[in-house]
Image (cartoon, one colour):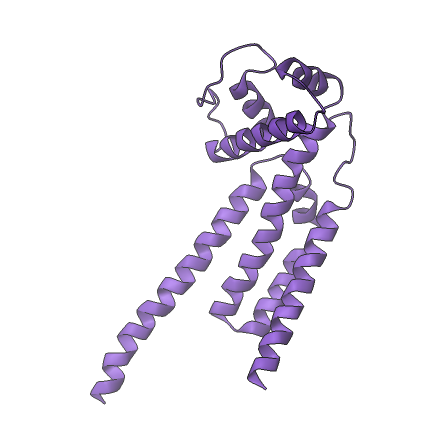
Length: 196
């Protein structure tokens, strides 16, 4: 019975994560090729590459109003996108990438938004793990369902912002803290239990 419950828990979790991915991927290219969002992490990452301005590549974002980790993640994503487009023959040089970015930035925006989708779905996973560790597997599944279809989080996952990476790393930290607290409680309970 225990192994069947674990299979059911995993199956339900996989279904929840698939649903979370589906609601975030659906409509991912909204508004494109026009851009209606601020997309600061993408714009800073592009300026770090220097492809639009003709400046040399730098790891200094020169913009510190937002957390820099999101800039570096988008810097990496845009570099991977450039390599993929170059290897597939979709573009031959940085000048092609610049032209595409200035005329139809759909590939760059979709790649950047996919980062938000990925981190959004991973946040659902860590919400489940945190709630399961703190309260039990049923509570973990309920928390995951509630967060998987949360309209605000879904909408933000489809935008290029710092909010979704921040939420993901906060959730991973919360999960780690719950695990640390449980281990500390277990260590203090064992000697007391043995003494009685």
